[in-house]
Image (cartoon, rainbow, N blue to C red; front, side, top):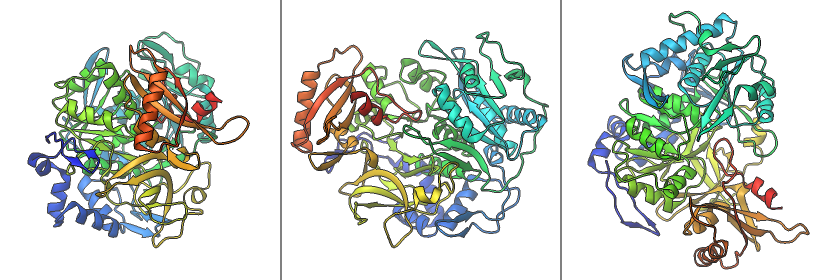
Length: 609
């Protein structure tokens, strides 16, 4: 399953190295052998130079089902592509090619782990689709889901898509006014929700939030809270229709299947449609880069309001694997036990979860014998945390995964064929390429990321913005088409990459630009500190911005801002620039985050001001 190594790679430490068994078992090795590619580099080069042929191979390998086959793999241009022209399909059909007796979902209910087979899941999805169709819901309609990531939300999600309607994804953490904004943008004809949900020992309202947000009709999963439903709303148990197969409604490949939203930390969030093709990108990333096989169990604490919710559904089911769903916070010993008891083999998370495991001491070296691949997304990770995690688990790499809702997955990642160095990437995802450009549009080893289209998964429209203006207007001139993405990335010696956060999070300190992620990487290892967030705050009267660091103490550790500031300043002086001086260190119980777990640095700046 790979070996732990202390070999040095430049200034970074190789923490995991694949052994012969990992390499022989990898999906990448199989496709390289089948295609006659001598190396991963050869496969990658072919995937970006022959994109129609690459994506045709992906569809065939994943067993994508078309009710009417495409006349070709690709038509159009890089900026205005048409993938699979002439085809008719419903992506739900591609989720049920595994045998009916295989496990599709492992979920915790009433403190016990329960399983749902592919056959049972399909029957329940079909019954929900019949319930929708009986009420006249289908092509052209939108149905919102606002609830935790449970087996019922998965059934509802696939049932909606099966009818040809589109899911509106809403995070369970949103306040009523945020839910209302998303209702106004999408006008759902129905909302699937839950009466309440329980998290970390607390009960949170859900049904009443969507009612306050203006939901016209609801289907409500009842958990025994005794909350009365409005006239016209229906309990989950009374909604499904006939217990017989439902014929998935075929649509054009570009038909909307899911409406997701950007984080929306400022202004109105972007409404980003996913089509019936987008899940192919999700499943490809899982198949080749996360090395998901049919006997795997995939867990990623998430919800449908974040792209990794739909990603988890499609990546697991299209690859014939099982998904594991946990019904509480993932930072506790309870989640550690769930991962072990469910036999999870592929485990994803965000950096803050890893920081919490380390701070609380809930993870031991013998806890996860079945986990063979870990993955991280959401924001820039802390190398020291990830080195600790790989050493603790002892036999699994962390595959860094960076992309976005408008990508349909990732644009840069790693593979199980590569040595794992904490908090670094090794390659753009197959079928995509990237360019790093400076402010003058020149290629550089540290700069803004631009994606080289086309690719299945890349968005083609936005509900409430002009798509071309957002992603293509004003991009630098180049020998290839470029698409704006907005991440700040560094190419390291040897060809690896390190994420430096969003370009918007780059700060100017004393006339020198530095990213918040780079500062946080350097100062994040101070003893007693669980998480940090660096922000630049302009003084009220004008003048140069001041560096303010927010710190979350480790559990049970009394704050010591004087020592923390001194040690952080020393680290900045030795590793970055002595001109970067910390103005203030502020203690905070937890960092404010979006539904997708990104730190809301703008909120911290406003809070300090």
